[in-house]
Image 1 (cartoon, rainbow, N blue to C red):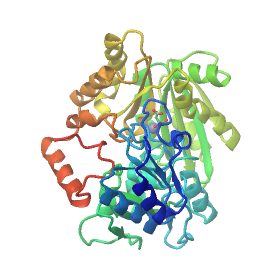
Image 2: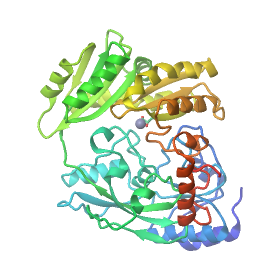
Image 3: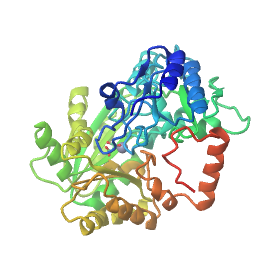
Length: 455
Ligand code: MLT
Ligand code: ZN
C-alpha cells in the first residue's frame, strides 16, 4: 500500500528522514513476534522526542490516519502491529534515562529504553527495578507502561502500574501531558498516568516515564522443585508464599514443557525421576537466603526432588527451563496465547479442565500450561490451531469467566481478546471506556482496533 505523498511529506517535515515506506523495510514492524498477527502499513515513523511524537500525532489527526504506537514489538495479543493498515509510530528512538534520583530511588526514562536498560541503570545507582520478564532485552519501558506489563516479580513488587510515578504522553488530540516530578504523595485529582498505563495505546502515546525503584536484594537462591501432583504444587506455592517474605518468583512448569525446552535447546533433563509438575522459585535478600529457602522447601509435603542453585550461572541454567518455553513453543508454529488469572480457589479446577476444553474442540491441538502461579496467572498456550481459528480461545475464556477469573492477567486485550472483553468488563465499564477514549482521542486515531470492542 503506497503512502499518500502529502502524508509522507508532512511526516518528514516532523521527523526528517526517519520515515520508512519501503515495503521490505517496513515488513518487520508489521508482524508480531509469534507470527500469529500480520498486518500492513504505508509507513513506520521514528520520532526522537516528545515534540516529534506530538507532531506525528497532529499530522495523522489532520490527515484522518490511524496510528499504532509500537515499543519493542514483544506484545502477545496483536496490540502493537498495524492489522488495519495504520501508520506505525515506533518509539525506539526515544531512548536515554536521566540520572537516577539516588536519594528518592526514582528514574525518568525515554519510552524506548529497554527493560534491561532500566534494570542496568537502576543497578548502577545502587537500586533495583521491580519488574522483570523474559523479553527484557527488547521490551521497552513505554510498551510495558502502555500494556501494564507483569512478569516474574509481580508477587513481590506488583505490576508496572505499581512502579509508575508519572508519564509524559501525547494524547490523541496532539496535546502533551507531562507529570514527571515523581512525588510519591500527589493527591491532585485524576491519576492520568495510572489510566494511560494499561490503555494499550488507545488514549495516548507514552514518550517518557517516571519509575519507582526498589532496594536491591543481591543475595539470591533459586530452586526447581519436582512435585507429585498439581494439588501438591499449589499447596507448596501457598506455603512458600506464606513462609518466605523474600520470595521473588514462583513459577509453575509442567513436565511436557520442560521436555519440549530440552529437546528444542538440547538441555539435560533436570531430574532423573520424572515428575508431573514443577515449581521454579527464587528468593532474594541482602543476606544469603539459601538456608531459609532449603528450610521452607523441607517443610513442604509431596516434594519428589529439588535442585537448589545459588550462583548466577546455575540459577540461569534453572531459569532456562522456564524462560525458553515461549521460544520452544513457537517452534511448533504460531501459538494461541491465552494469558489468564484465576482466583486461588479455582486454579486447580481450571488447570485440570482446560486441556479437555481444547481437545474437545480440536483433538489434534496441544495445550501447554505454565506461568506465574504465585499470583494466580496461568499461560495457556495452544499449538496446532489455525491462526484465525478462535473457537478454542472463546471456550477457554468462557471457562475462565465461569470460574471468576480474568481473560487477561498481564498481556492485555489487544486485538486478540477484544471480542471477549465483556467476559471481564461489564457493559457500564465498557461505556466508561468509550467515553474516556472519546475525551482523550476524539477522532479515534490511536490504536482504534484494540481493547475496546465496537459499540
Ligand atoms: C511468559 O511469562 O513467558 C510470557 O508472558 C507468556 C507466554 O509466552 O505466553
Ligand atoms: Zn508471563
